[in-house]
Length: 106
Image (tube, rainbow, N blue to C red):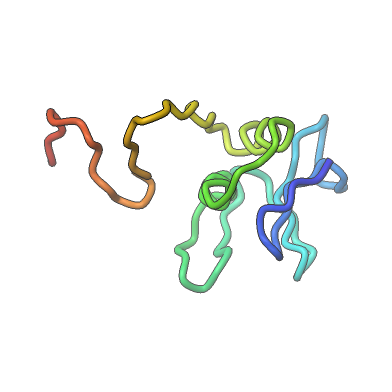
């Protein structure tokens, strides 16, 4: 199975580095495959981070089918929370503060 995350990066179980159905992040430009704990600089403007975090960040850019989402969650270890209609949310991975009134900075 393959999930296209961006024009360059895909998650795939069809790679030699993939074991027992565990997907790998594949950079199609270089052919390099990454396991969740491998670190990389996906783009020049991004810091070096674990592949699991890269996938989680890329997965926040668009919607995926349930099957694609399961593969993304399997790789990143992060489950997407179901959206509640009318509820405001913020992407905390981008450094935004939560919307709760009891949030305190440290």
